[in-house]
Image 1: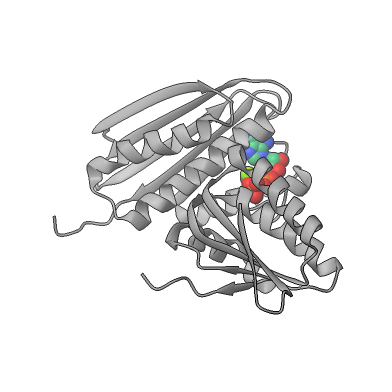
Image 2: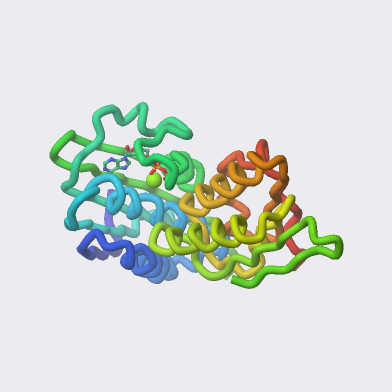
Length: 144
Length: 106
Ligand SMILES: Nc1ncnc2c1ncn2[C@@H]1O[C@H](COP(=O)(O)OP(=O)(O)OP(=O)(O)O)[C@@H](O)[C@H]1O
Ligand SMILES: [Mg+2]
C-alpha cells in the first residue's frame, strides 16, 4: 500500500517510555485530525503493545523497542511495535481474553483491548527471536 | 492520594489521579493497598474523575482491591471515569464483578 508519511523511533524498554510512545503516536496521528475518542483508542492500544515489550519480551533485561507509524491512503494509520525479546510460543492462546503469564500484576486483557480498539491486529512471533505487532485504524472523515 | 469517608464511616473513597500505566501502576497499587489495609473500610469507591489515561495496568489494580474487599465481605465500586478510562473498563468486562457508577455528565 502506498505510504503517504511515516516515522520510526527506537527506544530502550524502560517503563518511562510508555508515555513517550503514546505521545509520539498521538502527535503523528494528529495530522488526520482525529477525535478525542479515536486518539484515546489509539493511545490505549500503543500503551498495551509497548508495555508487553517491557514486561514480557525483556523480563530480565533492557532491550530495544521499535515503534513505526505509517500514514496510508484512506486516512488509515498503521502502527508497528517490534521487539527482539523472548517471543510467544502460542500466539493464538496469548490473544485469548484473560490469558496471561504475568501473574497478579497483569490482567490478560492487552491483546483484547488492542483488537477491540483498532480495526485490525496482526501478531507475528518466534520464540527466542521476538514479536511484531501491527495494528491499523482508519480515522473517520469529519467535516473539517 | 486523597481519601474521604461517608457519614457513618463504612465507605472509603480513594481519589485516583493522573495517568495509570505500567510505569505508574506499581506505586498506585501500593498506595491503594496501604490505604485499604490501614483503614479497613467495609466498602470502597475508587473515584476516577482525575484519571486522564488508563490502560490494562489499571484493571489489575482494581481487581486486586476487589479481591481484598471481597475477602472481608465488603463491596467495591468504580466511579466517575472519563471517556478513555471508561472505554477500557467497558472492554475489560469488569462490570461483571464490580459496580461501575455512571461517569460525571460532561
Ligand atoms: N512482546 C511480547 N513478548 C513476549 N510475550 C508476549 C509479548 N506480548 C504478549 N506476550 C504474551 O502474551 C500474553 C498476553 O498478553 P496480553 O497483553 O493480552 O496480557 P498481559 O500482558 O498478560 O496482561 P495485561 O496486558 O492485561 O496487563 C502475555 O501474558 C505474554 O505471555
Ligand atoms: Mg499486556
